[in-house]
Each structure stands twice: as C-alpha cells, then as structure tokens.
Length: 279
Image 1 (cartoon, rainbow, N blue to C red):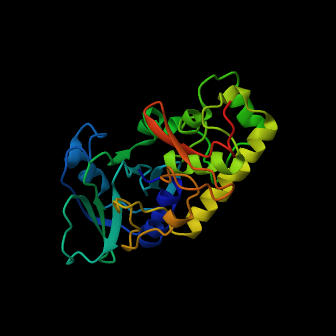
Image 2: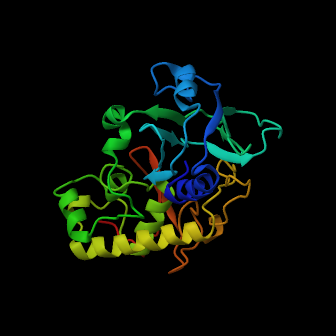
Image 3: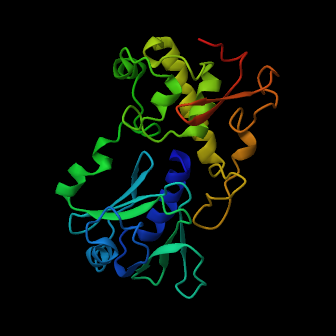
C-alpha cells in the first residue's frame, strides 16, 4: 500500500496540475471507487463538475483537495491505486476508474486494479463524519513531540509496530516505513508501546523523519509489483535503500546479522535481532 512518501509525491504532482483549475468533465466508472458517496458515481461526478480546485493537500495517507464551493475532494490510493496526468487522447489504461478533464485540457486519471482506493466529495458537515476527521498528527508535516507521543501511548500494551500503523496516534506510516524507522531507532517491533521511554521515542521520531525524508528524496518505494508509480509513470527508487523491510535472511546493513520476519496482528514485520533486542 502506498504510504506517506508515495502519497505526498503524488500530491505534489496533482497540486501542480490541478491548483486553480476547473473540473470541466468528470467520469467515475466503478461503483467501489465512489462507495463513500451515497449516490455513487453519479453523485461524485455531479458534485465535482464545474468546480475549481483550490489546492491539493494531504493528511496522512489521504489526499484532500478543497474546492471553490466549500466541498472537498478526498482520495485514497488503497492497496494499488495511482493517479496519472496527461492528454485525454492517450490510451486509457486498464482499471482506470476515474477521469477528470481540467480547463486547460489536461486529464487526471485514477487507476486502481484492486479497487481498495476511492474518490469522494464531502461537504464541511460530511467531513466531520468522515475517516479524515479521525486521522492523527501527520508523521512528516506535524509529528508529535516525544512527550506528546508518550502521553498518546500511555499504558498501551500493544506492540509498538501495531501502534505505529494506527492512523489515529500518528498518520502516514505503513508496514515499510514503520519497519525502517524501528530498525533505525533500535526498537524491537514487539515492544509494548506504553513501555517506551521519552528517550526511546525521541530516537523513534528522529528515525521516522530520516526514513520518510529519504523516501521522498528517492521518489518513494516501488515494490516488484510496481503497484505504485509516480503520476508521470516513473517508479520510485527507494527500494534499494531499505534496511530491513522485505530483506528476510539478508544481512543487516548495520551489524551483518540476518534480518528476521515475524507476523504482528496479521502484518509482516522485519527487524534485526541484534540491533533491535527482544523485549
């Protein structure tokens, strides 16, 4: 699933193309893509056509574009979704479920083979009821301080890896960057969140900033399935820089020990047994 760096890079491309542009024609062609609007695809299209995009923002893994009438266009890439920006005459790729033609002739498309992603339009009142209202502080743009994070974790006994994936505590992290940050911070993924000291959390927050910054600089992480591509069609180049994620059995770049994999709450976790001592 695309995580914060991949969504942020997508946001930057979309903002450049869509900021200040009017949506002339909109076509949503898959019911699951429009599932968060009661009226389905027809409602999404009607509420978007003729509207002007003020900007394209992001909160955690969500894209959020305020419109000129007070509504907001929200999108989530899901497991395999990606946006493209190009000419309407270009061949339409398989699994293209949303198309928006802008007033300068550029067309924005949403391609989502597994249809876990979505596009929605919400009013300010609907925004309060949406999942976006429950998203926690952004891991990149407004990460909590170590004391604030310690307060949020409280006496939580859940593994820190699971808590990092809880988008309410801090938003934007997924499997890849949670594993990478925990390794860099020297914290085992099974350590109970409530047992982490302020010093532990300072290391963890610093590690999160480093791994997210590296991923942004390298265009995000495109795995072998190429589910994530930049809107201009390029693959992200961060895969080769990963320290532990997906490297089961390979040497840890810090100490040389074999990277191990365990399953925490149905999600794979990769770590170094030497650099990240067991709790």
